Length: 120
Image (cartoon, rainbow, N blue to C red; front, side, top):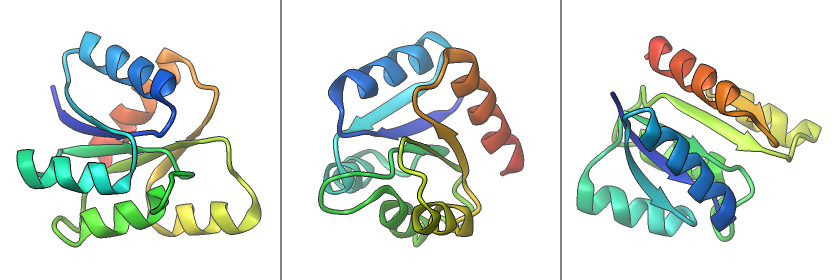
């Protein structure tokens, strides 16, 4: 299974994602914002993939992915978000990352992660 980074500022959502991924056997680093995510990566190393909310306090998920990709340009990623206006969608799609709309199901999460990891 994969080593994953999950970043979502909503604790309930983050905990749900982490629980589902750990149940599937993944090793998961979790953070509530971009700064905490970068600190976790500095301590524990780069993940094999990232699952990111777009609307994060301070640094959004798209900027966070750009910073993570400075260390690994081909880092697979998936965005989970409710924000899909034209500008946000264009920025997210420009990263090449997958996106899944919230609310999501366990199966949608698994399928999106599998697709992201296969593309890597």
